[in-house]
Image (cartoon, rainbow, N blue to C red; front, side):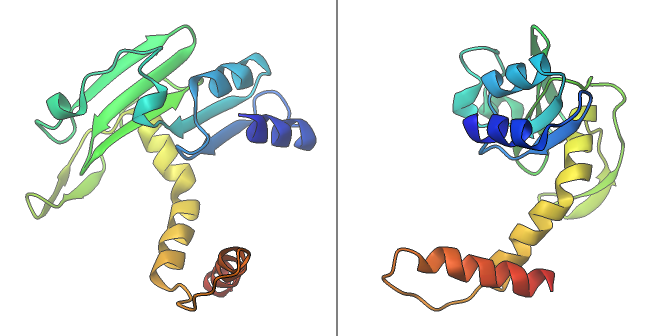
Length: 167
């Protein structure tokens, strides 16, 4: 939480600015803090970070059908757990479940493409995070395979990999 709030303070973001981030940063307290400062935020949520505040259906019970979703809200936060090829939990302080999107998505189990109803916060998250996820995917596919015992080597190798993928 301190990292994101420090960046928000340093960048002097205006009220109404919308942020999207991955599950490493998303927490209930962070989204409440951002809402208090007038900043809208959405991010995927880890299982252990939502249990104390919001009651969501267990992942095993949700695996019945692709496209099934469960919604929980607490104060000004909305949590949506949705079954895609795997279970995705999104926490937001600015979006509503409606309007839902109906994209044509590929199902690994059925091995065919079909229309699936995607909740609004999840669809917006996917639309805005695709560049970051695509970079991560490319870096993992085309990474440097040189190993070293130096502590700083992974940081250096990752920087080189990102520069090569983006260049």
